[in-house]
View (cartoon, one colour):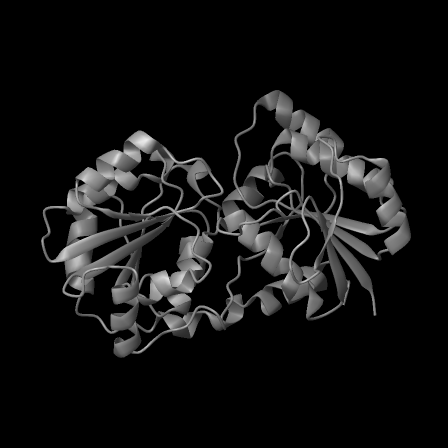
Length: 343
């Protein structure tokens, strides 16, 4: 069996943010197919990750020694900063110290580049680069860099639909109103997530917005106070059983507009459809190319459209769970390994 290493600065608990979730679950998915170990700042309780010092330039004697000891056939790198210039420089260093192993970099979030940065990236030549959207792929093609598309994934055994009785019990547990239509959003409580758009829904007395904030990213306290004072419920502590927050909701809304506001393929949307929630979303990143509009999966751009679509969606019978099978982490890992000819 071939040996694979997955290197990332993202291996730091808690795993309540999309890029961290991707790194950890992609590691688990790869282990379904080949012998794989993670290298990162912190070990995990299941022994999947080997604690390894990672410097700012991704070079250390300990890291080089660990690569020599493991003798991998292939090394994947998922940088914390995604596709920044420094990430490409670190990846170039990794290729230098990889001792003949194949290498690939997975970039999860879109970035903007000056003409000088574009020339430097072209000179570095990342060789094997995976991105989650055709938008990112086109950006790199314009500067002569070939890419492979890789979808995001979801734990389809953890995120599942529940019965009305379980939904009722979960609302009791998290002190969420039983008689309201619960609109959920999961992610950073920051202006770049466009969360202020939810203020346009506070005049809908039959609805209740619930925001779940990642603890891995600094939250904007003033923004959080404004949202709470307007009547929006906020959970800003780490919830290990985070699938329950989807399971108690009636609808998931993803309203991010800024490219820097989220991963190109938002994992929270996948977690929502795995729980069979209807979804309302902006046409963000790779969502339109993976999910055509339907009765239970709709797109909007303005707050007025959001209001109208919510009213239309309230009576729909959601079947979003039917779309999720191909996005299991096992299948995503299979895509990754197959394109790198590791299987």
